[in-house]
Every structure is written in structure tokens, then in C-alpha cells.
Length: 190
Ligand SMILES: Nc1nc2c(ncn2[C@@H]2O[C@H](COP(=O)(O)OP(=O)(O)OP(=O)(O)O)[C@@H](O)[C@H]2O)c(=O)[nH]1
Ligand SMILES: [Mg+2]
Image 1 (cartoon, rainbow, N blue to C red):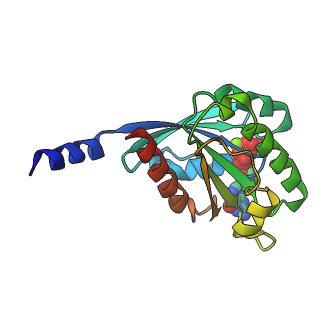
Image 2: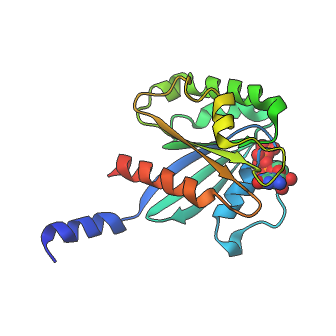
């Protein structure tokens, strides 16, 4: 094995750490999704609405994730901004059946994207889960993206986004999203 191969192997196996901020309206499924991402033996059987926020840790591929699972309830949303400066990426969870509150989700997203701490960042990846896609009245990820105005958002310089349909109860769709996020983060951190 040549030196360059050894070096790239070493880089590949070196653990990299990423801090992820998980936000979205209350009842969108954030804690349910994060629970699914944890190893089976550490998963909770009951998920209650989050009070304030919770910190969770898990590994995926070569990345070690620390996730800040924020409460989406109105009275706690002002906590989100305290974690903007230290986040490497954002996961924004949307209840794709909640058409009534899609404009509220859009407004919260726009506030996040236009926040000074976020605007100062470069290349911030934002992963959207169009969650609850198992339910009959869910809208497609394309429609969700439209309703959230993703093409018109004030994206940070070089920042990129991706939207995946997901089912927080079964974990369907989560791997696709996490793989995308890992690729973005590995590129940023190498
Ligand atoms: N049918 C269906 N229900 C889901 C899905 N994901 C989550 N839920 C349910 O949605 C409800 C809210 O889930 P949570 O994970 O507590 O939502 P949250 O976004 O963490 O809510 P807050 O902590 O209040 O901000 C729970 O009853 C979950 O079982 C999904 O993909 N499909
Ligand atoms: Mg929660």
C-alpha cells in the first residue's frame, strides 16, 4: 500500500465529529426521528413532547453526531438561536400532513436563515425531512419544498439543502437523508 493510500485510509477511518441542530414545529416528529437514529438498545419506547431541548449522540458512517433536539413549541422556539453558531448542519423536520401550519414552518425557517449567526456561516447544509409520509394526507417532498419556499430562501453562501420523505415511526427515508448529510459534512471537514 502506497503512502497516499495509507493516508486516505487513515483520513477515512479517523472519527469526525459533527454538531447538528434539529428544529421544526412541535409535533413534526423530530424526537421520533432522532430516536430512530440511535442504536436499538438505547432507543426510548415512549416519546413525549420535548421540554426545552435534549442532547443525543450517535454514530453514522465515519461521523460521530451530537444532535440538539429542540422543542418546537412556540414558547421554546427562542432557544433555537443559541445553538446556531456552534452547529455544523441543520435538520429541519416538517409534518407533511400539516398544511395548515406550513406557513408557520416557512416563517420559522426564514427567520432561522436570515439570522445573523446563520448568515455568518458558509456552506451550512440543511436537511429537510418531509415527515409522516405514511399518512394519507401527506404532501410530496416537492410540494413541501414549494410550500416552504425553498428555492427562494435566503441561503447562506455556498449552503445547500436536500429534502427527503420520511417515516419517523419505521425509520424509512432517514438513511437517505443521513447519507446526504454525511457526504456534505465529510466534504466540509476534510
Ligand atoms: N404517522 C406518523 N406519526 C409520526 C411520525 N413521526 C412522528 N410521529 C408522531 O408524531 C407525534 C409527535 O412526534 P415527536 O417526535 O414528539 O415530535 P417533535 O417534533 O419532537 O415535537 P416537540 O418535541 O413538541 O417539538 C408523536 O405522536 C409521534 O409518534 C411519522 O412519520 N408518521
Ligand atoms: Mg421533541
